[in-house]
Length: 236
Ligand code: ATP
Image (cartoon, rainbow, N blue to C red; front, top):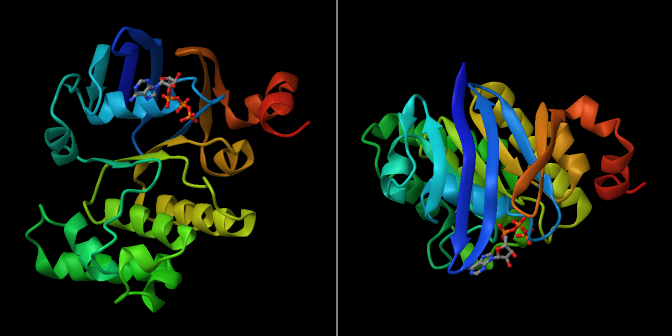
């Protein structure tokens, strides 16, 4: 079953149109990637879904038209956005950041269990549980951003460039944990990632954007086999 469907989505910043008809779908429990060069519109596509930019076209989540909904309502439906640049709270501790993620929930026991699960998933955070967000390394902040999104108990995770600025081994750790999360939770994911090797390790299919439109869509295996994808995204 399809969980999220975008059809001909458009978006502009002022007079500049940056999405010019993006279509994609994410199946229930599926993981889909968005690839593309800088400025292709990947981040804006995620923002259109989470309601943080105004969009045209159709955006349907779980059978509901969510285009034009306020970001808090979109989040309330079960879509968690981990933005580029992470957006964790620097002056709150790791534990407080995780609790903030759960602010709409009332199930105290479930919240504590989920905090334990996040700390198991990201053992680095366990060691830093009382540290302020601002004292964390880039990799730890990224882990915290994903963990905080998890605390909302989402049905769909929007993940923007989780590897950005991280050393290769740290990026690999972050993706391994996200992969495990996927396997264990079945949460659907829509993943923007410049590093196509990391993306393909997580997603089953992907779409390639160029100047705000889809130019290619296929399974990870199909895309990995294409010369143009190898040249553009896989280093040869
Ligand atoms: P990147 O990897 O560089 O983030 P992207 O594919 O995610 O690329 P977007 O961030 O969606 O691309 O940006 C698409 C276009 O919109 C770019 O040309 C960018 O310069 C422009 N843009 C992005 N944010 C804004 C903004 N707040 N105001 C004006 N233009 C913007």
